[in-house]
Image 1 (spheres, rainbow, N blue to C red):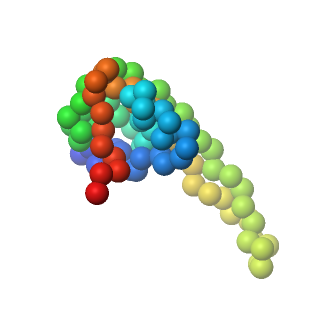
Image 2: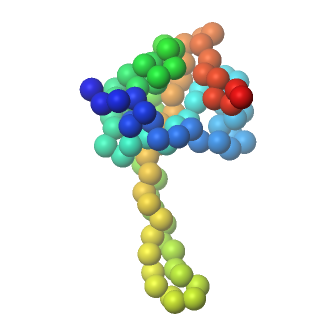
Length: 96
């Protein structure tokens, strides 16, 4: 099994995900090769919580163009995992 921090890249911070945190649903950017089982084990190991459900989605990279040189490139493709925790469990992502 891989290390939890190599699977979980970072949490997704947006208004939508912040609102979902109140219902026990957390969103993370994860390694593209990680499976749902890998994500579940990584979250349980890193935050000491019980995971009920994991949904994943692959986000395709978008084409970009350099304004000065005109060279076409792309943003990297990412994978997100939406993790639902057992009722009563929370993850403190923003404590200082």
